Length: 71
Image 1 (cartoon, rainbow, N blue to C red):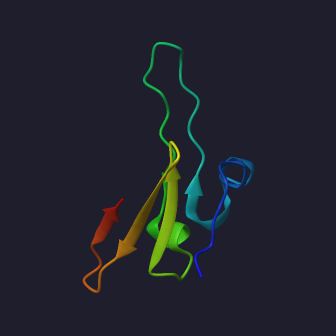
Image 2 (image 1 turned 90 degrees about the vertical axis):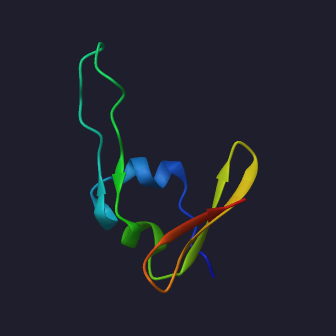
């Protein structure tokens, strides 16, 4: 079973599960980046499902620790 985390969950609890909150920057700086560990994303599973702009993607870990993203 794949655990699904909403964007609200990720932004509401940025300190949990290896998630680092974006830093504050000036208006002229590039947009801040959210950093998430793969362990936090997978939460013990080997694959997860990502919905992006209405399309479903699958992110999975190989036995060698590589990441594969498929549509």
